[in-house]
Image 1 (spheres, rainbow, N blue to C red):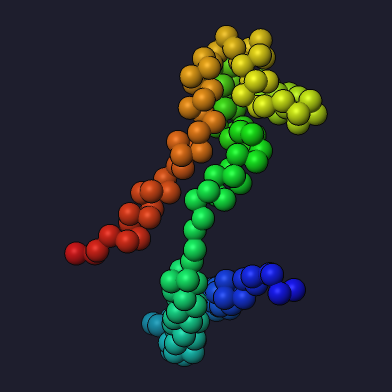
Image 2 (cartoon, rainbow, N blue to C red):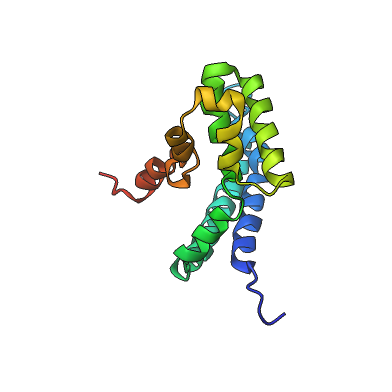
Amino acid sequence: MPHKRNPMRCEATVARAVLVARNMPVALDAMIQTHERDWIGDHLEWALVPEICIMCDGALSVTTRVLIGLQVYPEQKQRNLDRLGGLMLSEAVMMALAAKIGRQTAHDVVYECSIEAIEKTKSFRQTLAAHPIVKVKLSCAEIEQLLDPARYTGFAAYYVDQVISPQG
């Protein structure tokens, strides 16, 4: 199909990762030592380490090409985030409610609101704000904050900083 963008490079990276991962049992076997360290582990490592290095280098090379050509469309990204009308962040709401009413009850309440939003084509915000338990436990401002994807990124920024920071 001429319009389709195939993720072949990403698939190649995953394939290389699988090839590296399949060597884990051999790497564990190489750790086993009999009396006074025989050379079995060394022979395994001599075959294993170069192969792993080659596969990792290939994966990094392909990933670099993917990232160099990566195009981000912020407007489309926002449309995708908005497509579910906040339902994507139901977990954030559930966790905030869980601290106040318990996890299982919070799960049931948020599930009920989610289903209502879907079945009645209402906004998730509306169903949350109208729910008798939610409206007592969370203000409209809190609901808005919980449904803001920019506030629900966890440790992503930390990990990105760790990856791109110069090591010294």
